Image 1 (cartoon, one colour):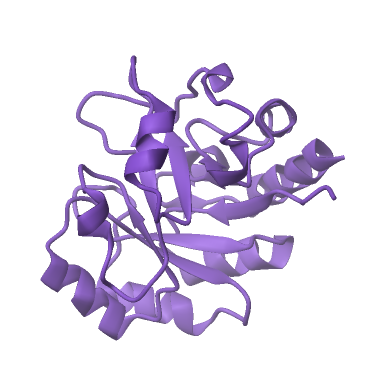
Image 2: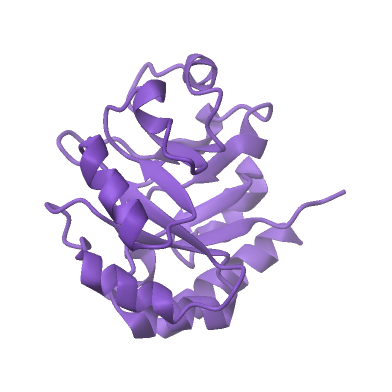
Amino acid sequence: MIMRTRIKICGITRVEDAADAVRHGADAIGLVFYPPSPRAISLRQAQAIVKTLPPFVTVVGLFVDEARSQIERFIREVPIDLLQFHGHETAADCSGYGRPWIKAVRMREGIDLAIVERDFNHASGLLLDSYQVGVPGGTGQCFDWSRISPALASKVILAGGLNPQNVVQAIRQVHPYAVDVSGGVEVAKGVKDAAKIEAFIAGVKRGDN
């Protein structure tokens, strides 16, 4: 049975962008709780965005080496469905919140995904992103997709430089469980473009066929 590729639009900062993502068929939206990021949002902004979402849209909270007490605070105040850890967290750091979680892996040279999968075997998935020194994510750059073994593809959320132009090729080559886009559907950092979201999601559907 062929599964359709799931879609996450990350770095949502505005209610209207969340609405556009949902209207065009996104399965999940990502909220960035990492203050140095240009896409970071406050607790109040997150609450306003989530309040407008219909059922069956997954809310993903993104954290980077955040204190456990702060993550617990956001979980209490915002109905987050899934946690995304984008820093140097260990598997123990990611666990114990009563939420499923995914671990972002920056695809630097020499990284062994089989070892990463073993170390984070309780993760719901591995988000594979491009590596750039000093930047936890959102680089806008692709990495070499051939580094992903077919055996791992079903656990992969593919990120890093995806956009409406390359997502078809990405899906047909990697066959990931999901794709994650942020900068590739923006007009400015943190400001999404409805037409680009629509084009990206249409590309995902073409890639599945």
